[in-house]
Length: 325
Ligand SMILES: [Zn+2]
Image (tube, rainbow, N blue to C red; front, side):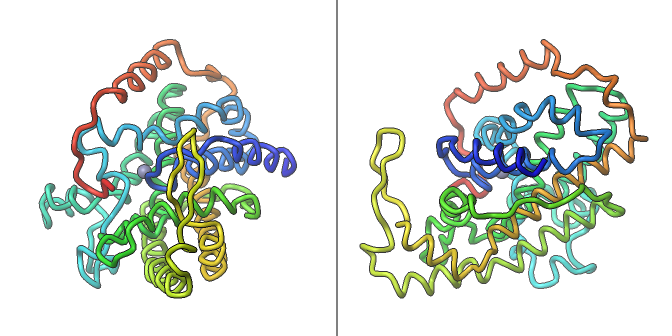
């Protein structure tokens, strides 16, 4: 299985680079795909039959950001907007209604809702398993995988998400896209069997806390490397899709990566592990339905709905508040 997984992962690495949001399209696809291989025997047949669906649709929530009101907020949480106690038991309420009562919905949406979004979708995916609803199981598994993975990204937990307050604009794409695109062939992303989450809501809040704890080094190491690199060595030019673009140089990326000492790999492993754990926990909590009795592929109606959603995303983008850079 390991050899197959690595082969699949390598195939994915040949996919072209895409615009960045969250982990970047490349990493979101890889995370959802690798999560499939950690599932137990009773689940893996169904998920493997749909592995291309789960891979391709791993990025759908990012594609929706500019056309669905309220979508942008689902991808992040500005922990530092709520003070030092934000993640303690006296801080942000785990229950969304309690959080709305305390802060108001406008404020919550402005500073992101990713952990509440994941907790809500945990319930929805469990219900879809209980209803033996193939379309919803697939749809919700792909989307849930995306939001769980976003919660594992340090820069998704801070107001300074693109280094815009510290003169480090561009660091978002550097950490989550440029770095894994260049270096993830060296990552060990095998994470073993999916684990059952006794307390799924707490698990996603812990993931946010671990991400937030890493924000300081994400920013500080970039600053320290910048001091060591002259501007003409920090950036370079590369061909992408027939265009020449200015981007972080390979030398700078490698130096930053060395100083991060495996941090991106660790957060990506955590994302694979947690995506799989959420899928597995939903299935267990639904009473372990026999997935081999379900239709193996999305219905014609669901395919049609996906095509319509993709068409809507071609519509002119609207301005979306929240981590829009
Ligand atoms: Zn996202």
